[in-house]
Structure formats: structure tokens, C-alpha cells
Image 1 (cartoon, one colour):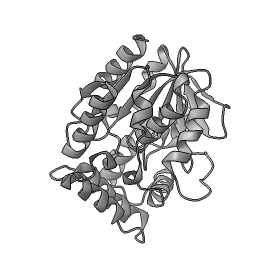
Image 2 (image 1 turned 90 degrees about the vertical axis):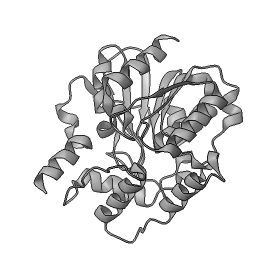
Image 3 (image 1 turned 60 degrees about the vertical axis):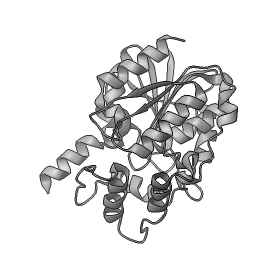
Image 4 (image 1 turned 30 degrees about the horizontal axis):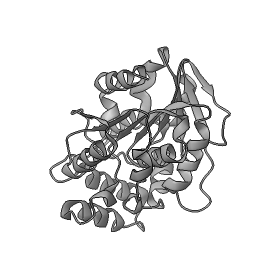
Length: 276
């Protein structure tokens, strides 16, 4: 059990690690908790469900040698304020759209990818490029049996159980049939439990109506990535590639957490950013 805990904490480190990170400052652009790594052209990084910004994007920290990485904690994560009701991708998108300021590259993972898609449609003039990794935008595939089953599966998760039991079920669903979810520590670290509780009350991503028409009118470059582990996510990403004329990359080795592959993901990010 102790080994499983160490493995999970290493994969899903929380904001308690912030004090030991080099080149970290606190951004004051919004009421959100935002850590800044490095300097250079601006990049806004938006995490997904359960895991906070640092835990999600730690393998991208080295890019701070050349880029200003603004690692956001969405409402309900880290030191950001809690949402007034439930965590909601549309409310989060307004926060992120405001953060873009005069312009930034925008990167979103999972639930945060849905947030990024909405934010990019709200303020396209402030987006230098958009990268989304495995957005659970299953409504785009409505009528597809496998996608509909994912929507029903998440909606049907028991939210009356303790956070650890919910997390085990949630990770199993994301891994998909035949996938192997990571071991869950017992007890959960405090920061991780906070993220699980926020996820338990979040608006379901299957409700998201991605603003495809608005995004199709934008001119900034786009990249859609996936991990090659779940056909439903692959189908969502393929559809976004076609509709948005985006670049597409399948980067295997880390399942849903494609950004955790480090160098292969970072190379695709930098190639996109340098193209602008």
C-alpha cells in the first residue's frame, strides 16, 4: 500500500510542491491561483479533473527555459477559490478567457481541454495557438454507442461514496475497457482529496456543446493530441481534427495523461508555438 501511495503521489503531485520549484512566481492577473514557470512568450496551461495544475503539467516545467508557463489552478483546486456552486467548464472558460490578456498560447488537458475550447471561442483574438489533449467532449459523438456509454458511465458514478472509492471508479472509467488505471493511495493526500471532491460535484463534460462553428472561423493554429488508449477519446480527437483543420498527434505511453510523456509531447507543443 505504501508503494502504491508513493507511485500515485509522484504522478499526481499537488500544490504542496510549489515552494521547492525553481523559477516560480505567483501571477496576480486573476483571482485564481496561478504559478509561473520561466519567462518568454506566454503559455496558459489548464488542468483537467482530480489533479491540480502542478500535478498535471510538471513534465512541461523544463519549457520554462524558453516560455512563460502560467499554470492555472481552476476553481476548487490548489489555492483558487471554490466555485459558488459546482465546478463548471463554462464558468472556468470565462476565467481562462480573461487570463489570456493581450495574447497567449493555450493548452488544455481533459476537462481543461473543454474549458480551453470554450475560452478560445470566447476570445479568439487573444489565442496565439490552441492545443487540446483528450477532451471528454462525448456529446460530439452523440448516438455512438461507445461514447454514449461513457457519458452514462460518468453520470452513473456513485457520488455518495467516500472520495477514494469515487476516484477508483472514475479512473477505471477513464482507462476504458482493457486499460489499467493507476493505484490509488490510502489515505488520499489532502490536495488530491480536494481535487476529487471538486470532481465529484462538477458539471458533467458530456453536457458540453463544443462551439465548433465559432472555432472553425478562427485562424490560430491548433493541435489535438491523444494517447491511443481509448477509442472513444480517439474518435473525439479525430472529429476535432477534421472540423477544426487541426494538427493531430497520437503519443502513446501514458494513457490519458499524454502530457506525462514529457519530451514527445513537449516537442509537439514547441513546434506549434514556434510556427506562430
